[in-house]
Length: 177
Image 1: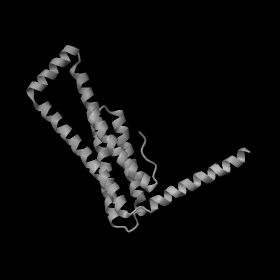
Image 2: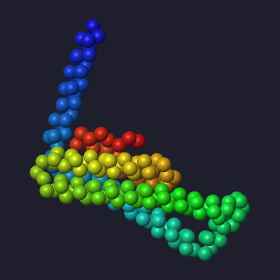
Image 3: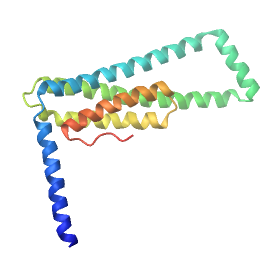
Image 4: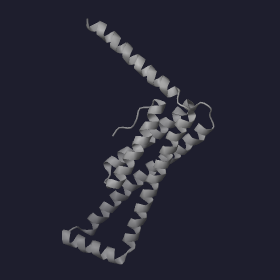
């Protein structure tokens, strides 16, 4: 009895999967291009935010009053300069990791766009989409490990959704949360 139930369930699952794949294959190239454009725009917005955030931090660090206030806070907390320096090094390493991953994602989305525009069959760019998703995984890990704040988490959440939507169009395993 159990074997009889497995076969119909497998047949239903197979027909569902082939139906969704068939639906994916019927998407117009313009629709897929919109998904790609959305990801590109999201990458640009994420990058601009991180650059603005870095500029603001550099400006605050260059301000003598801000430096004196930070020294006063460290003195009140009993935090030594060496502890502060090690935290700065760790924060710089995390930032560099995120910047590197974002550079890779930007390059892979640019490569996807070039290959996509040059082909008649959009599904031929599946390898490039897989690369975009892989690069997205690096950012996903960096954002999960770092403490970048709610705005970075929000922007990444939006971009991750856009990457996942694109991945589903191509039948690529999407990013985890």
